Image (cartoon, rainbow, N blue to C red; front, side, top):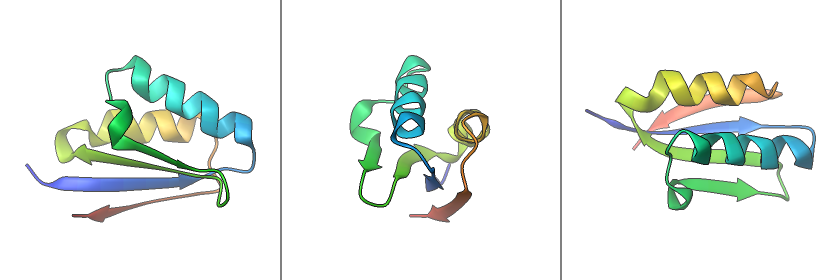
Length: 71
């Protein structure tokens, strides 16, 4: 089980807030979610098993960019 960071960039602060709420709602711990209001990005540190669910949530809010990196 590898660890990933998934980053999604949005074009509104509402998108950032809504993504955070949805991630917490499915059980992602808040200390695993980093919100960068300057860059309008959400970074989520997760295990690879959570990737499909987290990616679906991020995509649901229409990011301008989404990518992942292994840690």
